[in-house]
Length: 380
Figure 1: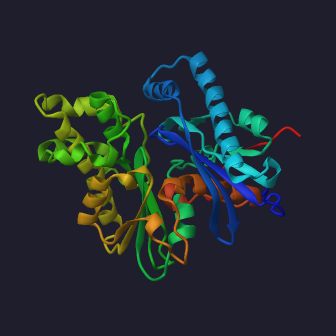
Figure 2: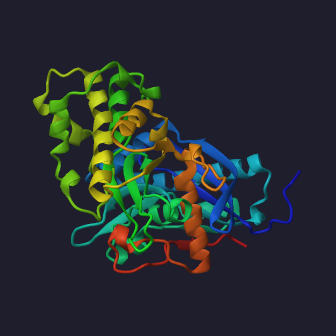
Figure 3: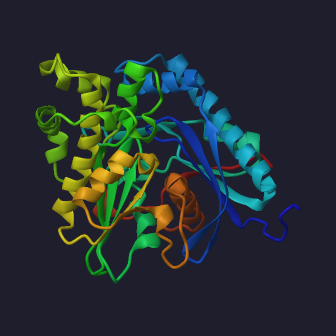
């Protein structure tokens, strides 16, 4: 039966991250501060499109015609994801207040003389195809205010998971990994930053050697022990030693970065490299948490990395009370770890509609709190 009497009470969140594995789409209703997920959908990205995204995000010089066409192609793919979600939920487009579309990051350079961040996936086309207003371009307002434009999800994590009973950290392991530190003392500011690579190097390495998109259940990495000498070489990178605020992406941690690091290890087995990359992700997350919150009492993990049992075990060995957000029903609500980021951007779209800021300057380094996003209205 078609859902009625809920006109304009829904938001849709779309997220396509640095892993470029799929589009996460959620239909959400906000009651108070906590979201209610009405439906969720994971929409595939064609392999040919994924290859273009990865290549263009790493090239110093790009073909502008190819980039422009990819912008439109992604906008169409986002539209397909929204329409599939609405069909799954049996909800009409006119019941949705807005679509929050993060877009696909193609380049993120928040530092330098002319800082910028660039996401593609034409929001105008998305609004036209779906008949729903689109809120997009969330990161540039923070960058314009002197911030990193990332991570943005800590403001949402604060709404969901901050408690005056214990010190918590939320870890998102997508292509990159980021942390949100939530002190129980509300007079202490929330902090957070990108810790470094999450799944991006793991996925690249297994695709390069076994033509697989990812290491399912860490089946390959678990067969090997990590190489401590290689781990220490990887950890030498300046990014891991820079103080926050900081953010990073595929344009930094990519194939060439790993190849350069491996130059001194010509005889190392590929499986050992895979195990060492998993250890790198876990180590940089754990070190970052211990540096920022020495008295952390609970760690909540979301993102694709939550499905990697090796990563979860390594984190559990060095951090307290590690669990998936899905297994932590605080106040009766457990949220699927796969869709936290899509939910976060749906929340940012709601903040935009209310004219309220959605960044945390203490996290991004922005001069002030700002309203994030821009509206691309649907054709009436």
